[in-house]
Image (cartoon, helix red, strand yellow):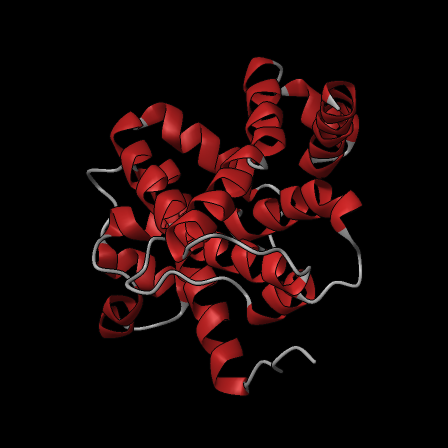
Length: 214
């Protein structure tokens, strides 16, 4: 069974998310130069000292890039130990990649506000990519666990890792495609009732392309 989240872990996750959301809000309201760590911490209801337990800089808080990058244990367990077979592996992995790479938030408008902030301050985008790259390493390890759970064998550890990385990168395509669609036509988010519906459209197209290549 998935490892149950402890109260301490839950409180830490909520505090991290609160700081992340507060950082985005404060920078959008005051500008990157004027936003301070003290103000961000106060908006989140914590001390400046607590802020630095989670993030090294205000830029790190904006993209959610803390000292420890991780994937939810329950999410990873459910993916690795899914009873589904190889026939849904690509779809399952694409969904897992999306959930792992996106920062969870109670604020449904946060992704749109984050995109707006990145447009205003493109120098922050590189940190966002850093976070995605770190997470991709962790996601790849879970993808490899799923492949082994399905009984896949490899000639070497290097071959196993390269195969898992390739599958991970391949299954990022629906998420990237959905992101490009949103960037080109941001109004579709409201028309579709959120970003998840746009991702599902991209995932459906991804499956069709894979089927045609077989």
